Image 1: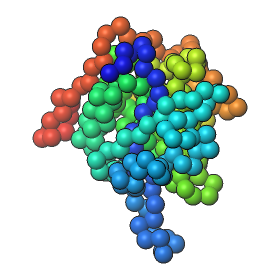
Image 2: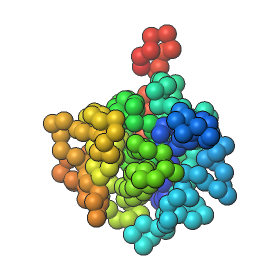
Image 3: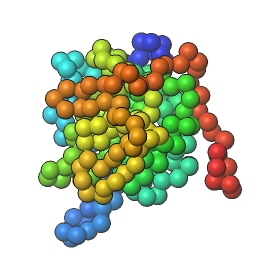
Amino acid sequence: MSNQNEASGVLVIYTGGTIGSIPKNTKEPNSPLIPLSKEDVSNKKENRLFDLIQSYEKGNIVLGGQSIRLELISLEKPIDSSNVSPTVWLEITKIIEDNYLDYEGFVILNGTDTMTYTASVLSFMIENLNKPIIITGSQKPIGETRSDAVQNLVSAIEIAAAKSLNKPIVREVSLFFRNKLLRGSRTIKYSASNYEAFQSPNLQELGTADEYVVINENIIRAGSSQSLRILKGYSPKSHVF
């Protein structure tokens, strides 16, 4: 493993959700959507989540004139986000823990229905965080016309790659959507169709991504001198940590 201070690149964790969904029956115009499988998104020759990003090629994405290593890992069984559970959150944190020293930041692709739940829970499960964990998704699947998926994904990757890009590092769990970066534990979803679907009542956004990514350095959290700690005391019987 790399030394934490030398780690570079961003790991994208695919959990399912709208961003990676396809029609269950392509011949039916109103067919319900289902998430791409682990095999669908793990294909090295044809990555169905990254191939629509113009600056992506062969495991790297070009941002700010720099080539950033970009890799993807999927849950064993990607889900519709309405099926999220503590077991899924534990699987996500296990992936982060196992790969923490090898990447400078992480992006989690989550469905919008439970994105605020995931963002809030992970904020409390993960302690002593020194790297960005950005949760994002989309209102329309990444392959559809006028989808917001690519913009959300690329912006989240850019924020997660702050160390390589010499930008302010957001050392906490946050949620990025449309053009706003919000503290993960302070978000609500207020629209099921608006591309600006999330808000953070009573707390200013951590950053914005318009022509440039601008981080509000006055409110982002400082790093920790202690080692990463994941709270894992989940009881299936009580459904609490």
